[in-house]
Image (cartoon, rainbow, N blue to C red; front, side, top):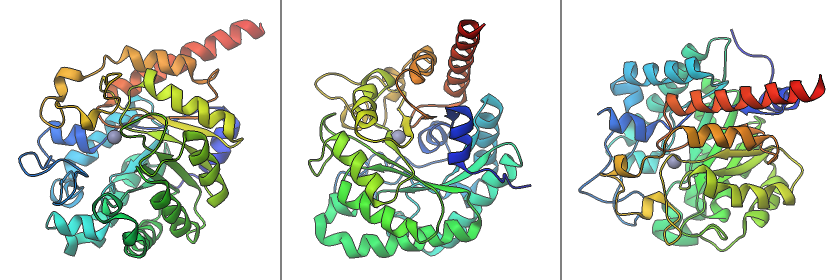
Length: 326
Ligand SMILES: [Zn+2]
């Protein structure tokens, strides 16, 4: 059975909606996803960088299991594992011919686990072409994302999560491509290598305003930073726009000098050594209301234990609010 409520109605009713965690890094840790280690770091420039979602067709049970864990931990939204699922990125990893099958299978698996308990979001990420080819890639990016959005809409997602875009220009293209689907759009930028500007030089506030103007229903930030550090970005966005704010931090500890985990030498083969404890996520959830955050999820490094911690944090603040009322 499909949920009839959409994500915006759910946020309006509850104040905060709990999302899920990061799939590719967790499935890599479990041995089901190729990190591309030994070839090239993700987004570094030339090759594939891998971290592609073919697990949806090659080992669907592994993906199904992770969805179940997030749902059991309290996730109210399951993201289909369609991150890096555009045809050109899949092509570089040797899976371009299975683009339709991977996107379709990922949505069906998420839907099957979600049942009537969670919404299903289609994930659309940066293509990596802006990093590789610059702005001249714009038309190619438009074609690739248009194709993926159509596949996700056909497979029946409830809304779209556009995430991990380093360039605002590419994000705005993705929002434009997504609008045709008429699905609600949750759009989150990723800040690397600094917290104050995205890769093409826009502040968090500017990004938030531009994403709303382009048609995003919910805007925010995901990946690269841990909760304490990502707050600097959500606060700027909160001040700049009125729409709901989303935060999906990663669960890796970064530094003042390098506030993004994919630029740390521990990425991708020593991440255990910078893994953040899950109570950092509980504390973040306890603050989410006062920080004006309306969609709380996790990105890389966040498995079901972290979603459990979020759920505990949210339950604590709800109890405090009830005590204050009574
Ligand atoms: Zn991430």
